[in-house]
Length: 150
Image 1 (cartoon, one colour):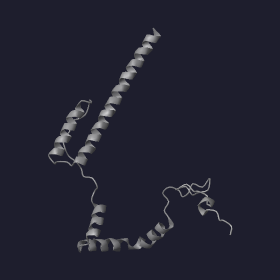
Image 2 (cartoon, helix red, strand yellow; image 1 turned 90 degrees about the vertical axis):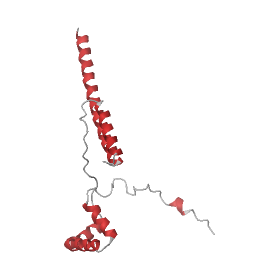
Image 3 (cartoon, helix red, strand yellow; image 1 turned 90 degrees about the horizontal axis):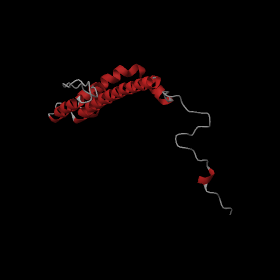
Image 4 (cartoon, one colour; image 1 turned 60 degrees about the horizontal axis):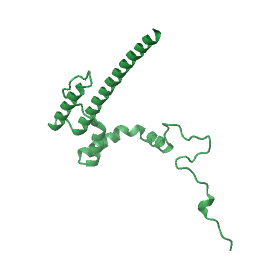
């Protein structure tokens, strides 16, 4: 009986996510698959009735439906109102971070909201530092130009 080759070595190895022939880049970004298009077409005239049914289920105690609806209706983030000093120079960020820490420790804002505000304060400081650096660099270039000209 002839010895058969291992079937794994016979098949060409395809790179995961790239099973296309050379020159074929696949579907256009943003295009929807056929099943999604068909499902959307079937539900097009039924959306009002389906939403009413979902609300009725939630009102009758369906916790899963209630979570689903609230997840779509309620905003993911809330508006945070705390008094922060204006950050005009990098040292003002220390005061701003102190106010953020106070608001977190008093429970006025959540730790994740405080972290987001601290990130904004850091971005302000970075922008101020870059602007200061550009100003200083321009002054040095101007000074070098004057010295070379004389």
